Image 1 (cartoon, rainbow, N blue to C red):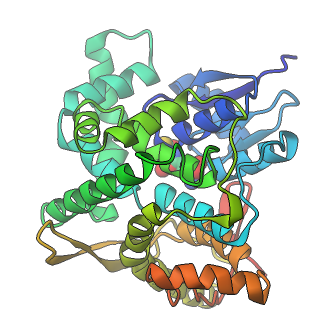
Image 2 (cartoon, rainbow, N blue to C red; image 1 turned 90 degrees about the vertical axis):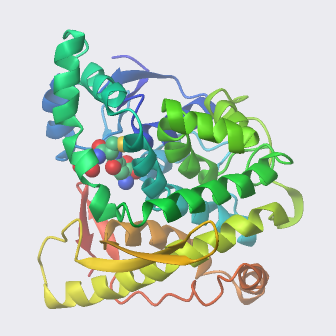
Length: 368
Ligand SMILES: N[C@@H](CCC(=O)N[C@@H](CS)C(=O)NCC(=O)O)C(=O)O
């Protein structure tokens, strides 16, 4: 038995980028295994029951899917230095950034991936799937394998009508984050937190690594590009979170964006999911439970409303934030609430979950 962890994933995979950076920061011995067709059939599907990457296989042969579960599994085994700040403000903010990176930046990440050179992406997909095939075969295979991802754009809300606002919102997000990384190496100081890893998925695998969106990032937000490079080649286990539970003001514009863009549809979905679970007792929760409106702003500030699917999985990610925030003591809560108020998030965070969800064998289930 090897004492290496195996990270089954792909260079072009958004969520693999999150775990890879984590493993490097924690100095955990690992090897990366390419998720080829063969690996899907022989390992991923039989071990996890789902066709999702990344998957972590531990030296004692435990298979874990879902990046948040993988990180939490490893945090128990490699506790120090933790990437979860335990002070009230930083703890809340770190988890909010994970939720945003995982569940909302997926929109620009998916838009830009398919907006430029499809042939280049087909080749990447094909190469990952069948490394030994000819280039021509790989392009053909890549076209086929990437179809579900390309085809997911409308359900994510990416349409000709919303694209200008998606781009405007992402570009402003980049400028805001750039101002932060011009001053701080990571979100909350000199140590990366769970929020940095959440951002890393979309910002590395798609938005830095894909040729054209990489150019955009380097042009608009060179400090963000440097942060991506730092996340991929960190000084393992180094650094600390800022003293006195400080959340730098340079993060406020991004926090405001999270509450303005992501939270209204998220809260609506959570409420709809509670009703859905109550009216469909014992039924498997589908990946989407219907459609909803969401709003982003164009560069000139005019709002653009699009339609997207309501994804119950996002509630599980939101619970990670609420499970930290809600049990805080009155004093701690007051400190976080003062910050939330400044970024337009105080009301948004008062979420009353009608029904909680959990993951069992990589399937989302209703609790209770
Ligand atoms: N929440 C999951 C998301 C994983 C995910 O969506 N991975 C993509 C590749 S980057 C995938 O395998 N998608 C297949 C699918 O959605 O069916 C995680 O954090 O691991």
